[in-house]
Image (cartoon, rainbow, N blue to C red):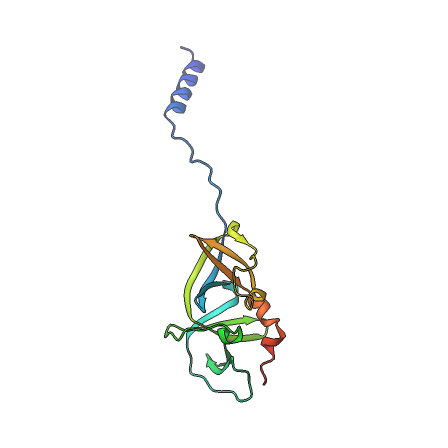
Length: 175
């Protein structure tokens, strides 16, 4: 047997005993957000919009403001207006002890939004995002929703903090 034939035979045996390469699987890209409940409906807000999640802080009442402004709280040395999101949206809020405050920051604006419950970090495949269709959510909330993710048979509307803080009605808190 020639040396070249021997090398070909060794190469053939190596190929027949070699393990297959793993199949090529495309990595799924995920979108992350903080899940919360408001008036019995699940929502998700982008992670980048929430700087902190608190239990209800001690509040100082502010006279002459709209009914959805609960007061001002001292959060780590910063005065933060605390807004009842359900009251602003004219939705029925629960009276649960699990109420939480989402501290949101957009540019120079910092607010605390009271929600019924926080469901923690949520992950959704990016391809599951779609626009909302009429009748899927309350008409009062539609302007503040940028679309929704679907996971395990449930819709998770994406609550847009950008739309909320750009709403003149929300920003005009004086009675």
